[in-house]
Image (tube, rainbow, N blue to C red; front, side, top):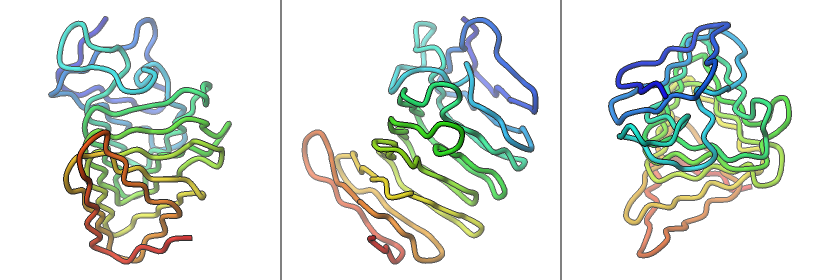
Length: 193
């Protein structure tokens, strides 16, 4: 397997052929596609894996960045498999991560680190296409968040923060640490529907 220690940039028309890469804890998977792009082997691990070593889980990215008006269809051709990020997800203004397009995801997205979004995050329209987070959710000017009636699980032992420049609609907010206590600090108005 190829080991990514820096940046792997997916441009429009880009594709990983052969084995999925292994990502180190210094790596970034950057989508720079300036349009619609279906996730492929670059982010193909099923659920949470391991990074940092040559024996890490192939296709399990450390940091993921969406830029240049990239619209990433997370389900790809496999909507029934969970996806995860070992650290942070950054969605820049004009870009989108979409769990609902094509065939809606029936499994969650797990973010071990933080979400930083000035772009669009669209959760699935199908059952179980939820968001699981262990870090903070930081929405900034230009953001759009569509939960599509899905749950957000806050799984960290300790404090997690939600920040946004305007009201945020979260239908179901679950505090769900494996052990211990979880505090969700709300730095914006949350509308529960």
